[in-house]
Amino acid sequence: MNPVPDCVALANHFLIAMPAMDDPNFGRTVILLAEHSDRGALGLVINRPMADLDLAGLFDRIDLKLGISPLASAPVFVGGPVQSDRGFVLHRPAGHWSSTVVIGEHLGLTSSKDVLEAVAAGQGPPELLVTLGYAGWGPGQLEQELAQNAWLTVPASPDLIFSTPVAQRFDQAIKLLGFDPAFLSASAGHA
Image 1 (tube, rainbow, N blue to C red):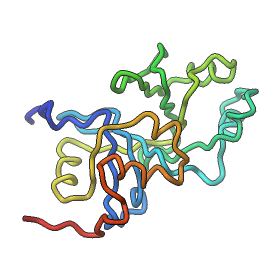
Image 2 (image 1 turned 60 degrees about the horizontal axis):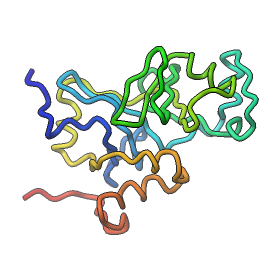
Image 3 (image 1 turned 30 degrees about the vertical axis):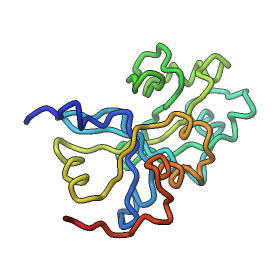
Image 4 (image 1 turned 180 degrees about the vertical axis):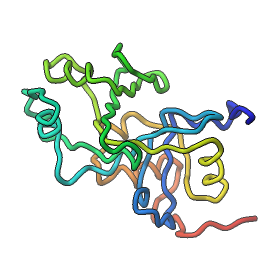
C-alpha cells in the first residue's frame, strides 16, 4: 500500500463526526488522532465521559491512591470501542514516560502505568485526559470514511482538550473550522 502523503496525514488533527453519523460509538464525537499512516489510524474520543467512573475510581481499580482532590473527580473518558479495558493518558507536556507517542509539539499519549503512578504521587503532567479504549482504523479505512463525508477534520487544539468544558467540545471543534455548528447540515452533498 502507498504511504499516506504528508499533505493528508492527519496525526494531531481532530476528527469531528458529521451530524448524520448514526454509529452509537461515534455520533457527535470529537477524536484526537494520535497516529495516521498507511498502516491505519489511532485516536481518542475526547468528549464522551463515562457516567460511572472518575479518576479516583479508576485509580482504586489499579491499586493506586489518588490524593490530589481536584483530579479525583475528573471523568474517565470512553476513548473508543477498541480495547475498552485498556487505559490511555493524553497529556501536556509530552514528558518522558515508558510508552509515549508524541503528538505534535506539546501532547503525549501514554499507555504505560508509570504516568499514572507519577500522577498519584503528585509528579505527573499538569494537564491530562484519561480514557479507556481507543478508536482505530485499518489501512485505508479512515480515508474511505473521509471520502464518504463521515468526518470533518481540523488541526488539533490542546486548549480545546484541556480547557474547554466537555459539553462544549463538539461545537467548539466545529468553530475551529470557521463556521457556526448550527449551519452544519445533517447530510453532505457531492459535486
